Amino acid sequence: MSTPDVTTRREDRQQALIVVAAMAALMWVVEIVDQVTSANLDQYGIKPHEADGLVGIVTAPFLHAGFGHLEGNTIPFLVLGATIALSGLGRVVLATVIIAVVGGLGVWLFAPTGTDHIGASGIVFGYAAYLIARGLFSRSLLHLAIGVVVIGLYGTTLLFGVAPRDGISWQGHVFGAVGGLVAARFLDVRRARREADPLANPR
Image (tube, rainbow, N blue to C red):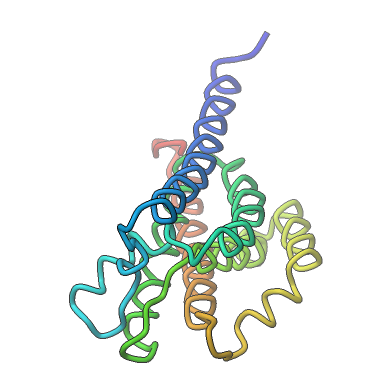
């Protein structure tokens, strides 16, 4: 028989996994709409140094330059996002928001004017960086082991992804990874404060 705490944690993880799956599903819905209509949704990506380009911080992760681009992002997004989701709904939501905001603002500030940046790869790089850095901050053997696995699976991709190349939003990869590091540090500070305060919200 499950205790209330165990049941609550299980439900929290299930909700977190549903959120990650829902984000991936939304990416596919958006791309299908973009492909079968003349909506030209890709125009709503991050446009550096343009005020109306700031909306892309929210919309860009759900926009892709075709199904091939989307397919390349979907599996790592689900794998890495689900790994974070196992720590709970609050953690995966906060990590995603921090990565999207830090990564998006970095692209908007530093990428060349006149470009349009779309795709979930910035979030993917942020998730990977978060999982790698998390163990360094928490000193958890489990977290460190997960970080090693992420490096083994995606290390080469991460290195090539941050190298400057034409036609690739390498700035999105770089600043997405920076967002992942910021998220890992911020969420570890929150964890440490909760442990120091037994009356704090357990999430």
